[in-house]
Image 1 (tube, rainbow, N blue to C red):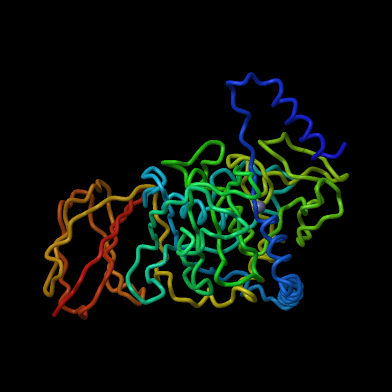
Image 2: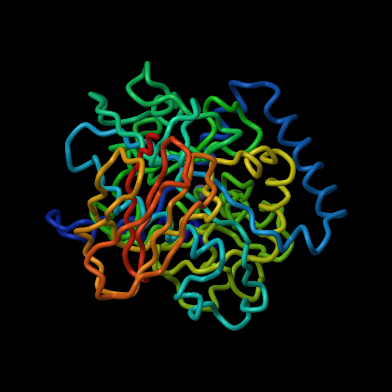
Amino acid sequence: MKARQFLFITSFLVFIILPHNSYAQLHRNCGTMSHLRYQELKQPFLKKRIEAQNIAIAKWNKSRSKASEDTIIHIPVVFHIIWTNAIQNISAAQIFTQLLVLNQDFRHNNADSINTPSQFQALMADVGVEFCLAHQDPNGNWTDGITRTHSTKSVFDMNADDAKFSAQGGYDAWDATKYLNIWIVPAITNNGSSDILGYTQMPGGNWSTDGIVIGYKYIGTMGTAHSPFNKGRTATHETGHWLGLYHIWGDDNGACWGSDYVDDTPNQAAYNYDCPTDPHVSCSNNGDMFMNYMDYTDDSCMNMFSLGQKARMRAVLNTTRLAIKTSGRCMANAIIPASKEFNFQVYPNPSNQSINISNYPIHLRFKVRIINMEGKQVYQNTYPADRQSINISIKGLKSGLYLIQLSDNQNFGSSKLIIQH
Ligand SMILES: [Zn+2]
């Protein structure tokens, strides 16, 4: 019996056995492939563009050097929060936890990588990609990398892509050659089915709709994040799609002929739900790589990208998505925020001689940075744990807008500073 048929029958049995006041266990449902098929129908040239892209990827992978594989690539991200009720207008702290997970997963710094089964450990990859919150909007103005839009629309249609247009109750994309756009919406529907966690436009589509859409219950690791999808892995999975990855089972409805265009992932019949016991054999393989971010398992079950997936993603970043590498929207010192955010006081602000910083909730040794609008760090110092306030001379800094960051190992805060001479 093919895995998908088995899953369908077991899901059906669970449904009829459970009493009516119980909830069936939530399963991952990603809309990316359905969205791609719909776009291919509507855009006759898309299939050809994707074929050309696959040729470019193969060409890049033939010629790539080790040095090109080791360079860290920084990707600026803007989160567009679309909300109808206040709870959906999630906190910046929750966004930071999502960014942290992306940075851990794409640098293979995720603590749960110890759970990767031994037969796949040699294939675990540090993709070498880091993400920052964009610090400049498309007009060159200061931004914290988060937009917030109140909308009367509580369900967004995947095929209409309405989340991506202000005129349709969503918010217009920022130039997708310079930013990874992630829309966070109340809910996503696809032909009446409203249990979709997220969907992504694969590389090769129109820039005006490029990016990722995710439900507010599946972002980050706190606040509204909803078990079993409360470890930030929906965004990791969707960002894999955004960088050209297909589902690990090849989207062939349970057969064994479908491909994910990656050589080192085992041939796999269908998606896996929940968290199977290893080895979970299908298509005569030695076990599915169900802990791969591109399967359908629960957040706490996923923990790796493979070396082949890394090569494909980096090839996309050196071909179709080449422009984002040099967009300059990431800070010189890419921010990898910690799990908490906080406020502090800067005064006087605007200032022209010196500034005082106080009322910060830090009790450890901490770092202060000042960053200019070009993303360059113009001041950095480390202070002892018992320092209650700080005075910094800013006489040498030109008039303009700056960002002050305070951070220790667990906390992160930032504030604007205006210098006027
Ligand atoms: Zn997917």
